[in-house]
Image (cartoon, helix red, strand yellow):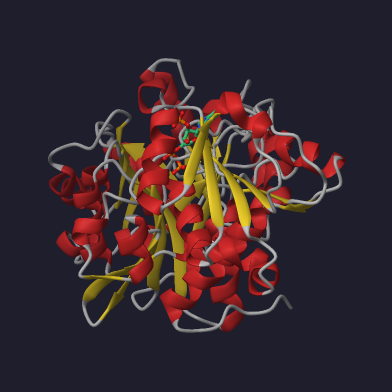
Length: 478
Ligand code: ATR
């Protein structure tokens, strides 16, 4: 189940939050600790107005909530509110009140017995869940994942405690995001999400993202897991390329972003989750190489890999950036209309670009802010290079490729090609896709050049990746 935490400061706001997301969730949590004033009649009206089961929660500040009154007053309030039509009530592990438990039982309200750790994962996580469950309550832990090791502990919960069917595992923090999307793989009954506009500091995902993009509620034991590894990784658009295509072809699979701190730990996690394939982004495109059993010619040539998938129990690496980059230029390359290219930048992305162009026998000149790197890449690829100060001397090129992160949000004012004068005859190609119209492309467009947008390459490499992952052709849009 997807559970919407209603964090409005009164019942009317909470009702609006419910109405905005009613199609996406199956359970509500009424966070009365967020209410400015707790009005029993209003809460009763709210419960009559909603059509989903509701959890009664009054979270203390020490557990990350807003209730700052005395514990005695809080428990009295919970006791009173249990006269209303709640399906569940959350009581923390240290609350020892048999009278409250009895009242819950009498009113057929299930107790969710919770334990919070806002800074990490307790060493006794599994034992804690067993203890929370002891009186027949639903055991809930909300803990903070600070590393992939932490995330692995959460994905081992089900393996360790599969005989506890009624448990809730809420993973806080950015490293915990895969456990929120794949909550069913942690054995959790539900995962929590926040309404639009709520505080999203802890890396919460909206109900619509969880349901419509990741289909989190459909993940089961047979779902094949794919993903992207990187650091940072949450800005990636790749889930929007792969998940809708799985859906369209009726493939039971999900593609999840993994924030990675340690590549070795990720391969352990890949075993635990039986991950079938993943995209690789900065800074792991080289670091991943020692873990691969087989690599393609392009990976060997470029020394970097952006796509890994499992075949015959062996991790195989290919580089779809190479062909993805070439894809929007295919016609010109085949007609041999691109003979000379200028490449701005000499990092990982530039490596793929230069090798791909050299593969078509283009002459390439590399210009980079740090000239030593341009010289090195030029030496390795049989290209020429020039310092940035000589950009104004470069003429007669058919293609200019901007491979640096200069110009990317939030550095939109940067144009690393400044000094180069567009003639209008060359193709201008920017690998940056956010924003679409970079300063580099605007300048080229104003001179009359054909522009190739970063999104074209992103999609082309994603399509090839999808085919490596699944063996299926990427579907046409409906
Ligand atoms: P990627 O894998 O995305 O290419 P990278 O390997 O870190 O990332 O390389 C980044 C490239 O962008 C480098 O060529 C870098 O120039 P330096 O070698 O001088 O660092 C270039 N770059 C990044 N920010 C830039 C900026 N503001 N202006 C010009 N070049 C920039």
